[in-house]
Length: 347
Image (tube, rainbow, N blue to C red; front, side, top):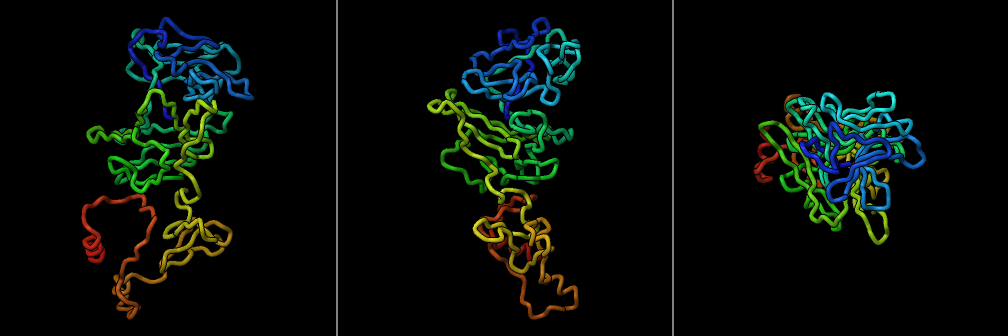
């Protein structure tokens, strides 16, 4: 989920201080009562967790979990500021199950405050550190699942989803205002999204700012790898699925392999570009198209290097394809198509 808490220098009812800890089942509530930070259990489980939950709706909605991979086995949990200034979750045996791991803290001045907002995905390229959203293992198990989401600074920034560290989904490139070619339903509000790049620090982050305080929206990477927008429907008393950036197999990265084309209206759904053939017929017959396609006709420069073999096949040209996603390493250019063709042919 896109949400976080911040370590701040403040003292309030929404704050944990070195002298004020909370014990299971206590919690603290954000200033306007939007979120609570405290202890909870999930349905069909006796495990106890510390996390952030929506506070003003009747349906349990978990925003963030601290000890997701090390749950408490009883109600002896404590959330407090440790001697080194970190926020920690401990059990009745004083074993630390989770720590915020913040460096250079001031132990006597550090506090933890739950806010009414806070949406952030970041990646620090300079330090090689990525902050990612991790999926749950299952709807009832918040431990780390197979999928993670973050920003990948290819030649142009894109949002990507990994499946066990393998690229699983990539968005269209970000042009500064929107993701190019991303088709969204008219009911989806993306005006609040922004991607900010600090080139000096080589830091990139994506944020979402709500257009209305009365609107309850959250985004979740579920256990199946779908990044979904959920919006609260007060009339129905439940969350409604408004949009998922991963809708069909067409959205899976490399589904048809190199030089392959996905078309959900055809069977099989994968085929090869004109002038290409399937690299592994046996795999393709079993519905595994990941090996992709290979070129059956050499390019003109290759024919020229082979002493003119393949003469009479004509000059190389361009085939316009619509509704295609560009490669994972696009280059941005302001030249027109004709100039692009000329440069490509001269390459």
